[in-house]
Length: 124
Image 1 (cartoon, rainbow, N blue to C red):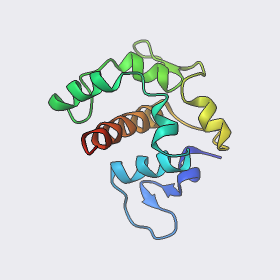
Image 2 (image 1 turned 30 degrees about the vertical axis):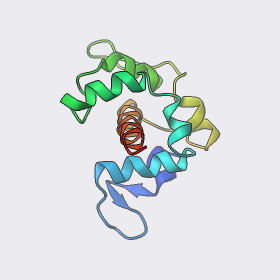
Image 3 (image 1 turned 45 degrees about the horizontal axis):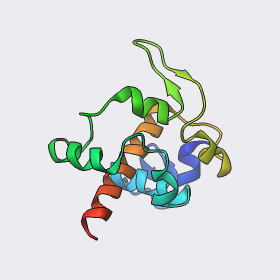
């Protein structure tokens, strides 16, 4: 099953309703399908302390190392060439029947989980 099939999305829209989903809604669905925030958070490649600091300057966490996010997504991406290597969040995908996924979806999923983790910790 593909990443999008698992979360009920096709071309950025809910498969059942046709409603367009925001970035946060799409990856929030993925977080839930994969077992919730705590299950996904284990694969975030930065500590909560680092995330708290970085998110102050960039809500999208583009001020962190993409190399780390790629690795956590199961890929290495030297300039001009992205290769699947496994590891990172891939076993969690497999556990939930997801066999087709992209590096981009993995990185976006992990960054959304990181933002939600910081928000959850702020609200405590």
